[in-house]
Length: 250
Image 1 (cartoon, rainbow, N blue to C red):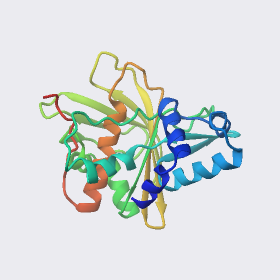
Image 2: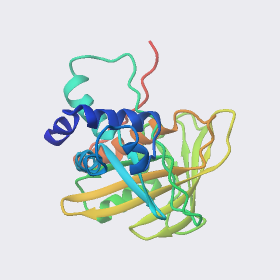
Image 3: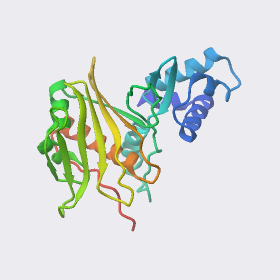
């Protein structure tokens, strides 16, 4: 928390976050053009934001792209604001990310969280349908597992209708899963691609979700990923099921 407050306590760093909120996935050069300071000064500010987990970076070819990571801010709101003030709506910025592709194109949607758990526990929670059903924000029935290319997991609403299916395209055990994202809601059900990146850190696990080729007409996906990550983090750290279900309009 201290790192977040410190990172926000500077107008230049807030301006960088505002810029990424408007246009995610910018290079250092893009950001430098917006601030009246040296390139080195902008790099220092970006480093502080990255240390506070308010941005994440992704390298593609010769370029390094910067993305807003709103999850720490959501956690701050949940802990310090939400108990005292019930918001009419809680919205995460639409974070853009992509998965690693053969063309080395830059991501346009990415989201990261850190979880206090073991490597094996996180991998099991992501790949076994019966475990996903314990923390998913909307589906308490999840069929299938993800162990090899071609495997699929089906997410079912409580009334039995399909919400989503993930089909494994490629998998690197305990490290990376590339999936076809096939929605069962809305008018546009065009498949897209998503990736789980699992990394061990000195104090726990880092989980990153990247999404690529997401049609503009498929709304609410960013919010859904935020709720998914909050659910798996809570379940792994506390052992308790908590579904971060979308708030219904009153």
